[in-house]
Length: 249
Ligand code: NAD
Ligand code: ZN
Image (cartoon, rainbow, N blue to C red; front, side):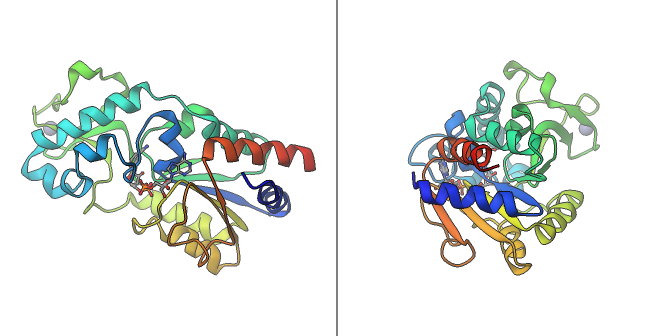
């Protein structure tokens, strides 16, 4: 871990008028939920392009539910890691306004973050594509899956955004406003290739914000949009930044 960059990030956060975080699957890897690009795990078994497209759900919901059931099992048992906890801590300290997450695992809220925008929806609720009935997913057990609509018995779909589906309008509007009005953004554990989500750090940059990237490896943002990349695991880097912020404050 590059201690100079940790210090620089702490300074940037302390001098920023408004800081936000933009997170992706990488922040939850240390909670046991694999990202899309990891060498093993869920997405070796299920090609996201094949299973996470809305057309796949329409044409073969039973097949897609095999993947959803595995994802549910992971999400239900996962616990927030030091990166999620560190971001919640920064919010409590008054140093982080908003977390915009592409994740659907609810781990930011579980860690205590209050102001979370779920850009790609969540597993907490499920909806019926036929009659629009919505069900509470937190009450479901693995044995209840795949879940059926209590009204019309069609297969329910978790309220996560599949490829080919629009972003929930409120989440999009609010996220874009936050990214245009912040003066620093922590971009954590995202490969930044899924649009429109990936435009969030770009918007921030266009408005003059400092873009601080935290990732195991470089991304298309690195050296282009990001002011600097702190290489390594989010579960180590975020707590180190929080500690440094405390020290400098
Ligand atoms: P991605 O899988 O495309 O990229 C993950 C990024 O995180 C990579 O750049 C990787 O280098 C980095 N990374 C991996 N482990 C890390 C760690 N410990 N610390 C820091 N960085 C780490 O994920 P994405 O950009 O979020 O895009 C995939 C889409 O699929 C998103 O919509 C995402 O939310 C969704 N998805 C969600 C979950 C979840 O809810 N936990 C899991 C898988 C995929
Ligand atoms: Zn129904």
